[in-house]
Length: 195
Image (cartoon, rainbow, N blue to C red):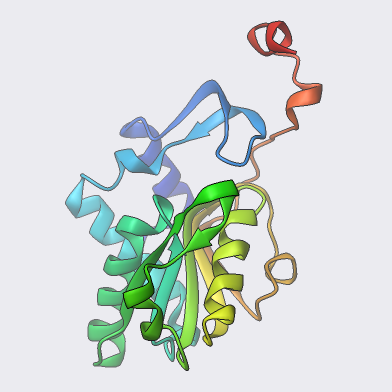
């Protein structure tokens, strides 16, 4: 299992963590960019990360479905389901990603909705800043009849807590805070021109 510092070092080495002013998915601004899409094609490192995350989630292994918002969960959910299910529990765990529709509302295609009903659900995202996308996904899972048992992520950059997500447990591999702020208070010269 990778330590937090080892994982951060690997992510820096592949360019997934860098200094760059960005507008994050939720609209907040930051000078620290974490782009885990650069991790996913690196199969050996990605497999090690998923194995480490599965070990962090062992106390949530009763999960029957792993679900998260698209992009963050598209690659992570199936790999974590494989590692946690087959390798730790000896059974299949389903994986889904919630897609973002109109006005930021998440949905699961109608023909997949029955896969959540009556199931124990583990939420997943790659990077947490505010946790809003993951919380919306978990709300959807509950609306579809799932019981949320916890959540996990690779990097909790915003210090999001289990209470803020409304879950009994939150597991993350990296818990290093990276500052972010609302657009209205951004001092980056390029952003100031847009206000």
